Length: 384
Image: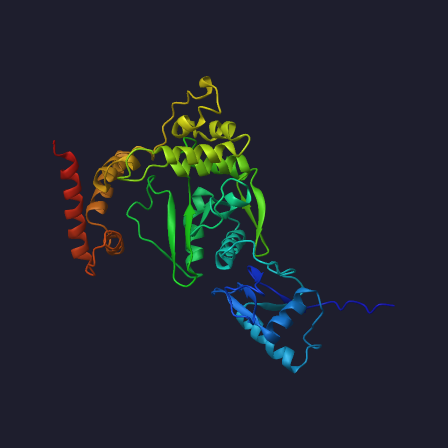
């Protein structure tokens, strides 16, 4: 008769994502497993005896506190301290498989897994937008993206960003935070080498923020990154979001180019059902030209206007900020205007960095910011 399976606690492998990197040219020959601990720390690489023991835990081998020998106990205690193993009967982050990477950048893949686990632990629903999922869904040819974009419940955007900061990111200062103009929080990496954008909305949709998120989230599709299940928009919704992002105006960027329109039209034609989804989400006003070949004229008459489109099309930041300010409630405009003219230290210094200004003094950075704004305003406002 087979031996009975011991009851009670046993050692099990845990992680917020793990990838088998054996044979990868991006890592040293001895590297075997790239893993995100369940403690707040950057990824670790397992090699040799450590990797072998961790694999034994994954395959289901029963190792209890009493059955481990001295060498195993030392490694298991090190795993426990690092957040890679626990002595327990169950754990929500238990690892049962270590797949090979599905993305060309294993570190980016681990970021997807980590963000999904951090959101899940707090009960924050989210979908990952843009990025390599577009390639996996056949919506674009390019595979890699430089950052990770996650769209979460609008009311919990700040909560998710704060939770991720503790894992090795720094929130980029933004004078518009807390206003309707602000659509995402940018998290710059301190250790991971991959930026995260936490979105509370996707600019360009006339549907209200919460309704738009619910519309996309209700039929989001599962993908697996680093052994962790993540959710991405269904193909038709993702095509619409990608097209809207492609045609979104950039301050000072001028009019939409034929190449941009062609790219947006291409992504829409790759997804059956995208024209109907564009109507659902209120994306017809910004994609009308790209949808002309896909929808009859009587379905292109949506006259809604996204609140964050006009100001983005302005020729410079000074005019863009002025138009954006006018979209805010009257009672908050004076406070916002003062914040834009004389922003907090962190915002002033970040603005200086983006402008190529080497100022290290917040006061000097503010003065230079005012000078740049006035110069832009007068240059565009003076008749020629």
